[in-house]
Amino acid sequence: MQYYSIQMSKFRKIILTILKVFILLVAVIIGLLYLTGNQYVIRGAQLTYLKGHDTANIDDYVDFDNNIILSGKPQPWPEHEMYNKIELTDTLTAELEKFGTVGFFVAKNGEALWEHYWDGYSDKSHTNSFSMAKSVVTMLLGKAIEQRYIKSMDQPITDFLPEYKNDPLAQKCTVGDLSAMTSGYDWVEDYYLPLNPTAKAYYGRNIEKQMLKRGFKKEPGGHFEYLSGNTQLLGIIIERAVGISLSQYLQEEFWQPMGMEDDAYWSKDDKKGMEKAYCCLNSNVRDFGKLGQLLLHDGNWNGKQILDSAFVKLMVTPNSKAFNKGEHERYGYSIWTDYEHQPNFYGLMGHLGQRVIVVPDEDLVIVRLGRTKDDRDMNKGFLDNDTYYFVDEVMKMLKENNLLKQQQDVKEFAN
Image 1 (cartoon, one colour):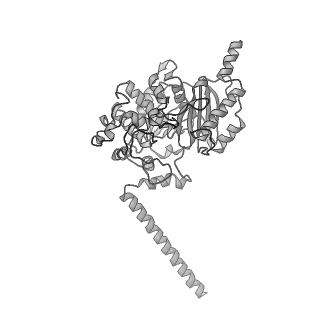
Image 2 (cartoon, rainbow, N blue to C red; image 1 turned 45 degrees about the vertical axis):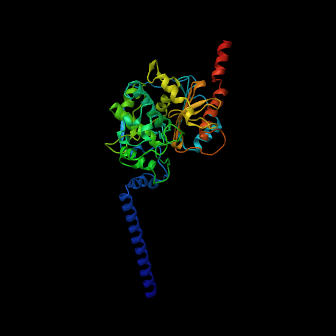
Image 3 (cartoon, rainbow, N blue to C red; image 1 turned 180 degrees about the vertical axis):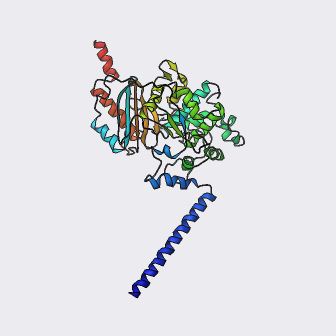
């Protein structure tokens, strides 16, 4: 009995020693994070790993400060005569459910054709756009140019960011380079590593300071390199040029004139800070779909020109100068494109499979919001695999129900 008591005492001492070492190690790590200016990692860990995630998630706007974008007078989508009367293909349904889709919406000829929600989500649920917000920021850029706050896409960024007046590479960078991802900005694009600038921008407390401390590493205007930092710099420029927040500008020039059905939330770095421009506009399938419809109609909304048609054309046209010969020209100005696929399409696309896909030839808008994406390589095209599933399966659904434009034209001719 005495031997057992002695052994238990030794065991408790070992456990206590291990616990002390662990606490000391954690304290040292936390101290080093603060000393190196990387304390955002602690916040990031709290909002991801401790909640069972390995990256940001579609519902995390509740964890951040937000600017509210008020909706004004709603203009609900008109409903197609076949609204929700068409069954999705088994293949598409399986794809949507397998990868945690929470909302799916299809608009045809400017009318809501089909929508469905999973896991308790609804047409009123707000989820994170992630990088779809990049397209919205470029829409704001187009409006700022139209209203002469910014001269053109060729205006040097140093006109708005004097912090870079002594950086020879930055001096050559234009606002258009930021939108087209050809800036040469010094950035690491990663959504999973804790220690990198993308994570710091997401979980840090002073995004403007972070952006303006980083320099440029390549000659601007050259090869395409997708960097979230580009859009954040562009957001800073637009705020400085216009004199109001991105959220206020979006509300005044797009959200309310387009009759969005609900308020939106744009997550910020801090209560008194600025929006995370490269991501984090939180809305629903119906209102995100209207952004696609606006582009589809060349910036016109119910007879009102919200965004200059020439600027829309620029956005959705691949920037050929950014791609080497033989490369797929897949990016315009903050818009992903595939004009090699049949049918052609372009869209707003974000982390974890957030999608607003526009199929111009069919007057079609497809919106998908969800928890993760299908990243299998199935040789469907040069964009994410899931995008092709959505386009091809919806096209199949339309064909089976005689709703393709060609079928409708033949029917009209016969009558």
